[in-house]
Image (cartoon, rainbow, N blue to C red; front, side, top):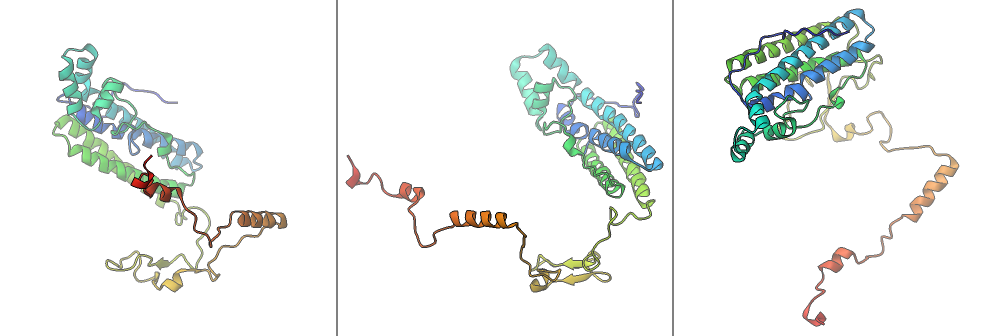
Length: 298
């Protein structure tokens, strides 16, 4: 059960109308790294979570993300407030309104035309929000890692938004939201490492022959070694002959077919086989010839 408090989690002060900034901020409203995606990701994870502590944490953070969604949506609406009034009441001549909504750039003319300078659930590129943004897989050791990355991406977006405005009230609110991404990252990391067997994700162990092998597949200038492929426990395989059929087979593909399946596929292969001894004239070749030369004039 959710209950709404009419006070925002953080005070929002906007100094002036700025439709262009409002449109950029939509990225954190309805974009893939935004607050709605975060809230729905953690909420749906909580529904299937078996651990009481993690379930409570996910519900707390999911609910807070809804608070952040309200903050972002409120800022977007306030940044658009002046433009919304002018568009709704047609207080200026058409040419001036057109210049204003197109001059802000970054698709703000789309959001003002289609959504009346409101706060729609779209990205700053006017792409509608979709549940496809949620990458939950139902395994805590994988989902928590995804959550950590999601919070990191959201923090970076907030940093970029902060760098794009000199409005002190907007910057303060964005800095608060950015800081909460850090706090959530810490909570998710603590939850991940409180699972004793958290790596590799899932239940099954890796194949011992390959779990500490690094295949140097991209060779040439720029080859580098680092902790990802240097020293123990890594074994680097760079020789091309050793990079194929690594499990000891012949490296080809095999399939067992029932007799009737084998007969059918053989017949299909024979029917569609190429005649390598012929050289057919193609339509492209006919089109490239001089069909309308002097000797062909009517």
